[in-house]
Image (cartoon, rainbow, N blue to C red):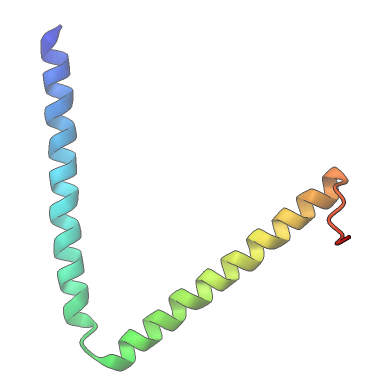
Length: 76
């Protein structure tokens, strides 16, 4: 039964190492692609836009759930 723990730990280590290698390689390749400043600014604008959209959706869902539950969210 001791071998099960060893196999699981080795598998977990292999998965983490593989993930780290792929992440480093992906970031290195993306950095080379983003050498153009215009592409970098466009990507940052897209990320900011998605973030703001998700924030608005989250706020809408929060207030919608609060209204559904009958909570009073008015300012005093």
